[in-house]
Structure formats: C-alpha cells, structure tokens
Image (cartoon, rainbow, N blue to C red; front, side):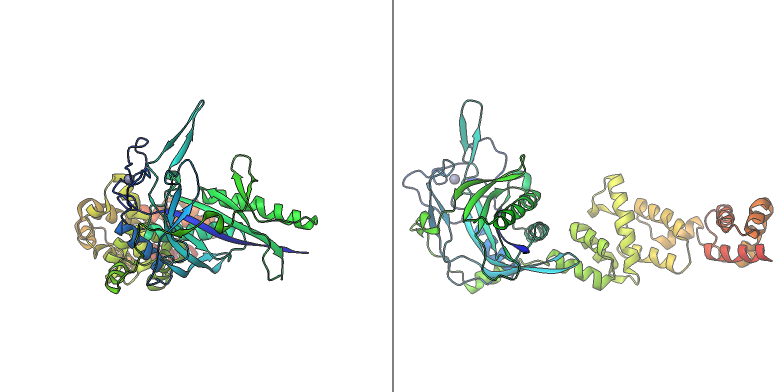
Length: 474
Ligand SMILES: [Zn+2]
C-alpha cells in the first residue's frame, strides 16, 4: 500500500515594530540581557497592557498580503501555562476571534503553481529566552512581549520540498510587505510542523504529530524527511500512531517524543480582561490597505510579461527591489527592454560593486541606457565597443551618442574600407587562408578576429565575416 504525507505549518514571525506589543520597551535584538524590560513585560502585579497600534496594523496588513478576510470583530485571550521564560504565566494571544482568517499563498513549485490555504494569522506575544551555563541557568526577558504573528496553514502540503518552498515564499511576502525582517539567525521566524500519513486515497487524516520550535527552513525540510518515513514505517509494520509532540534534534537528525499532545482546554483560554476587543473602522482599514505592495510572485510575472524577460532575470529584479525600480525607470522609453535588463543586471551591477557606488548616485541618465541599446541594435556600434561606451557613461554621465562621436567609435560599415582590411589580413596570414580553403571553419574566426583587431573593434563584424568568406572562396 502507498502512503502520503499531510503537512500543515504554524509559522511564528516577529513583527517589525519599534516597541513591544503591550509596553514601550524597545523591540530590538542583541541588547544586553534584561535591559529592554519594564513592569509590564516582566508581568509584575498591578500593570496593564496597552496595544501597540503598529503591531495591529502589521497584523491586518499581513492579512491583506495573504488574501485573508479581516473580521470586523477580533479579541485577545489568555493562554495559560507555566514556562520559566514567560513571567506572566500566560501569553496574550487570539483564540477564537483572530484578526485575519481564510487566506491563501500562491507559489511556484515543481514547475507549476501551488496554493496553500491560510487558516488564520493571529497576533500574540513572544516569550523570553532561557540560557544554560555550566553551573546555572539564566533567562533574558528582552524578547518577552515582542509582537509575534502566528500564521497557520491548512494541511495542504504534501512533501518536505513543498513545505520548504512554501516557507520561502511566505518569508519573501513578509519581507516585501515590511511585516518582518525574517532574520532566521536572530530567531525572527520559527515553525511548528504538523504531519500525518495516510494510505493514498483515504479521506480521513492519520494521527497528527507536531514537531515543535524549528528555527530554520532547512531544519523543517530535514525533520520532515526523517519523520514521514518514520511514520510510514510504523504504520506499515502494523503499529499505531497517536497524537503527540516531538522535538527535532538538528545534530542527531532525528525527532524525539516530547509529550503526548495537550488539548486546547489544557490551556484554559479565556478572554483577556485587560484589553478591549479589536474592532477596526473602515477608515483605519483603508489606511492599512494603502500599505499593500506588489508581491514577489506578481512582480516576477509582470516583469516577464511586460518586459519579455526570462525567469532568471525577473528573479534577479524580484530579489533586488531598488535595482528593479531603477530598471523600470530607465526602461520606460526602451524599445528593447530585454537588452536594457542585460545592461542593468550584468554591467551596471558589476560597476556598482566594483566602485562601491550607491545606486542613487549613478550618473547615467534614465534615457541613456535605452539609447546605448539602440546604437547597438541599429548597427551604429558593435557590442564590444558598447562596453567601452558604457564604462565612459558610468564614469562621466555623458550620453552614449556624444561619447561615440567624440571618440570616433562609430562602427565601420563602409564595404570598401572593410575589403581593404580583409585583403591585408589574408595577405598577412596565408596559412590560415589555406586552412580555411581546406575546410577548417575555425580559421575564418581567426581571420575575422584579426580584421576586427586591425579596425580597433570598429568594423561591422557581420560584414567582416561576409566579405572574408567571399574573398577566401573566390
Ligand atoms: Zn516592557
């Protein structure tokens, strides 16, 4: 019997706010331990939380970016548990009335498009961090109370590679939208994985096993690559799986049992009495919706269709937004956007790195790159000469036509002049001429190179080829 995996992901993402969710402490990574703390995030008696409006905005904005609906009524709840890194002994979260629900993420996978439905993205708060030393342990509460979004997917994923690709697509969306920096090294994104297996064709799901607190996407992929075959082996051997929580051992490359899964009622959720429900007005939502940006996939598709770029070029622009904006600005007047993209991606980018010039200080005027392309396309200069012209444009900001004129770089298409050069080269290289006549095609390229050299790169290479061949064959 064949088995298939059913995977859902809960992705926790720290929101990019200046301060924490319920107090004014800085939301900042890397500060000395317990320096960004106050009575509120330390859970001292008698304090009250005050919601960070930007945290609420980023939550709703995420909802828009993930195609969710935004309910007109949301509320906050207490999730009660004891952990040494959660001083309040409860976490403020959204239980049955989250701020966003029922969305989806589309992404490219295995040569086609895939869609993962989003159950909900709800707002909660991060906890502190435990440190274990040789003889004692410590806890740093700087992270306690940092706004955290939990993005819950439907169990629409079927393989470790698909989960990995989805997570990267989700991360790109969140970075694009300014929701989070998603810096994995700083723990800004963590995942819980729910995975079960079932015989192919069976409707009902197998026992759901949760793998907790993975802090890298490659870790998620490896954990699934371990866990899916493990579950299939248990079932195939006639064993029974039960709902449980497991821990991923990244060094050992295995998952281990942590606890049999707790039920929601174990957390004794109840409405947070210190916070009002969240009922956004139409005007407030309208303001947030104005921050919606074009998402990476849409951008890629637009660059491919509007400018005729191949996928790798479009991806380069998706990954470098300022460069893409520059390209769009200069290509507005271009007849050949594909060639302009080549100049931007290959030449301009290299020059920027080489000279340490910020993009904003580039001297080349917007219309000049399309003009350079037009000079090449029109046969006015060779693509080799164009390289020199480009270097000059980059250094001085002069227009390409002016540089060509000033330096006398225009391509020679005068047949008489080229014929003369060809005669010279054939006379000086009788052996190569003989080789060509004897059927060695490569000799023609050598002779062509010699003519180009003699013309200082200015002879029209197409004409040179034609004339040489004609002369050699006659
Ligand atoms: Zn605080």
